[in-house]
Image (tube, rainbow, N blue to C red; front, top):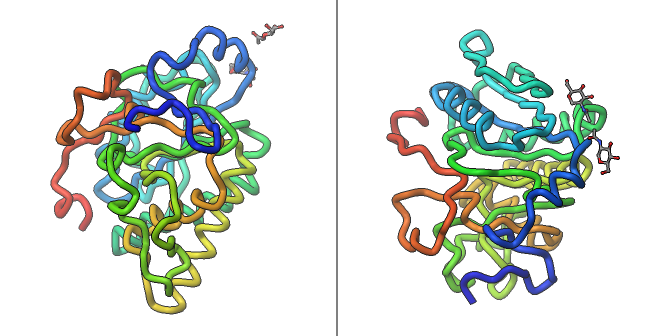
Length: 269
Ligand SMILES: *[C@@H]1O[C@H](CO)[C@@H](O)[C@H](O)[C@H]1NC(C)=O
Ligand SMILES: *[C@@H]1O[C@H](CO)[C@@H](O)[C@H](O)[C@H]1NC(C)=O
């Protein structure tokens, strides 16, 4: 059960050894890829290591546009970038609560996937900034709609998934539904698919707000809800999202994208 390479709806689950990168690189020789990241308030400190590690491991040899959203545009230190790589800096308001910061990403995504990105890129990858690339992450992760299995739940029974379970929330997933628990720290797809996803999540967040409720894991709950009923066409194994404090690390041969350890209280407030 554990290390499947196909979902029950026959989407590939990407592990080391399931693909030939040379074939895929050739197929994607004119693909334009975006990497969307939010770095507001104290999270700005994670941006440079994130971008530097991306230059080393993310889509090497391909054209990449970094879409960075921050309330501190003037403080951004640009990394040395390869030819064909572009850094776009965008101003964004910093919400007081980190929960609101996290949910604002969906709102910004709806705007950019509709208005700017369709002319600039083919695929968009959305990532958390408090992470570093630690090994190859390339075009094998591209697909129409791509999500990553949460590394703390890849061996869990469905009943243990921390989906939103209150029917009053638009992120509600009934018991018995759902396939994987996905983590919102890495997902992506074709620009128009991410537009549909972010619109749906944003709508859910707004409706919940009207009722004065917030899903248990904010945007991640809404993302999971969307993906239960709109199945991803490709699923990334926990190789693509790992945290060295987690158990079962011996099952994960490549740790490609790693959580940076931090004092949550200190950076969130
Ligand atoms: C991409 O690959 C195709 C088919 O192999 C080739 O014809 C084309 O010249 C390549 N384009 C670039 C930019 O390398
Ligand atoms: C990739 O970037 C290079 C350098 O900026 C540019 O010449 C080329 O046209 C780009 N390719 C695509 C497919 O956008």
